[in-house]
Amino acid sequence: MAARAYAKCKTVLSRSRLPGLDYTFNPYVGCGHGCLYCYVPDLFRGKFARWPAKVEAKDGVLEKLRSEIRKSKPGVVGISTSTDPYQPLEADLGIVREALEIFKGAGFPVSIQTKSPLALRDLDVLRGMEAEVGFTIASLRGEFRDMFEPGAPDPASRLRAIGQLSRAGIKTWIFYGPIIHGFNDSDDDINGIVEAAATSGSRLLYDRINLKPLVSLRLRSVMPGSYFESIATFDYRSVYRKIQARCRELGVSSSPAF
View 1 (cartoon, helix red, strand yellow):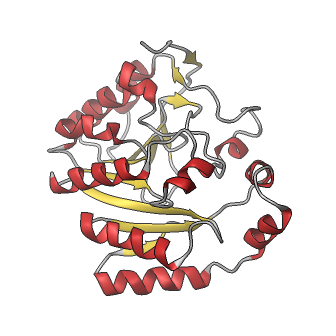
View 2: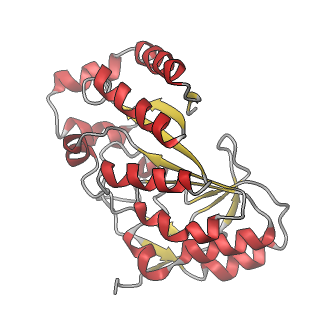
């Protein structure tokens, strides 16, 4: 059983500035995926000196949620927007599962984004509530995962999970991002991900790399300076046009993520 560490918790149902979300619910702090491109450490202003950071559950998070939801108007809740909701610790603690049951009972729609097939565990709860589940799939190639997402589940398991959720009637989407020039923006990359969205009946969202300071520092540590400079100066509009064209060909609904 995973060790239970607890972070301080002041509020759990927070107003959101993210498009399409009224609230965010973040029961965990930190992330074990160790994705080099993650900009969350920048948002926390260096709180995570090392990355990946250890994952902690917030103290009393479910009790606070039950209290706060009674005082809140129903709206769409983004589940764990600052880290993956289906961290390995979630398999032990089941906080997200219990939270989904609370949201379901209160009539709050939810939007989940993850890299983990553990989301399938909660299919029985997601059925019968207004819910959507998105999977981040920046590349179908294992070597991309090994370089940029060393602690995350492999892309094949994510594809299988999104297919199962979609076939069960859950609204699904794929987040193709971050797009990193020279690493996951080839025609093969684009075609593979758009075809995966078409096969699973998923909407496709896409976005380029966000080169915040700590992200840039991590990327510079694993690639020559010339590679980094090409990423920083590349015009991603040409990639977006290719994605949009392929989506039109396959009848996939798509849009930029932001």
